[in-house]
Length: 262
View 1 (cartoon, rainbow, N blue to C red):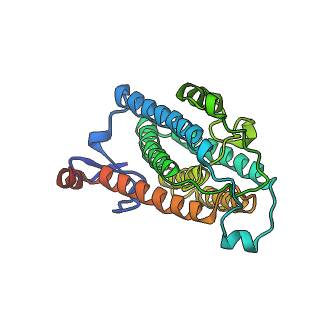
View 2: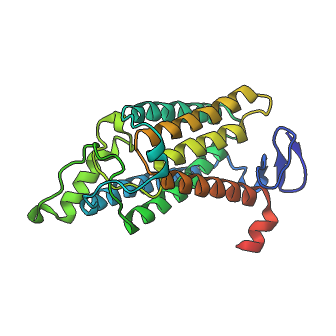
View 3: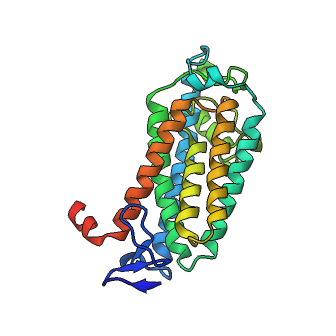
């Protein structure tokens, strides 16, 4: 690591604007855990709010056939592929967290994961609540909806608590609520994990970078052929995730941009 100016550090000897490997001196506060705890707390709150919104939207999902989808029309339907996709999510997350734990600036990276994840999942709450589309997999089991007398705020809240432990994965056996489309939470994890792995691991670890890209691509393909999400969900998720990641790291690397914008 070498110092470039008063407030910028270069990691692995490389400096870019968009895909930057610089960590601002102003963010170099690994011994101050208050910001880290706050970022992680916000991520947990947003994660729960995501489940609460899903519990609300579950009652509004139209009971209609899936929408036309160009990928669905041209690929086989393999429902079991969703399970393999979610195992790939866990592998990708594990690699990202492993790199974070052993990184010199682990707390800064963890804070950035939490901040970016919070932004993405808050946006997902908004889009899920705004528009409901039919379930992409007509054979997917959706829990029964509440009857009129049981459809209360308290019951919706309790139901959201029941799925919190499943963290949105079917393999945990708790994700039986439907309606969390536009955009894909699975794709968020694949994209962000891949970006963080490539950004904060040494550049010479090219096999790992290739593996992370391969895991993400295969995971998304499995997600689509299992009808876990519509293709538009994946496209929107990829576009938003990459832009949030690049914008965040550009602002973190360039203090003058933060002053101009904020």
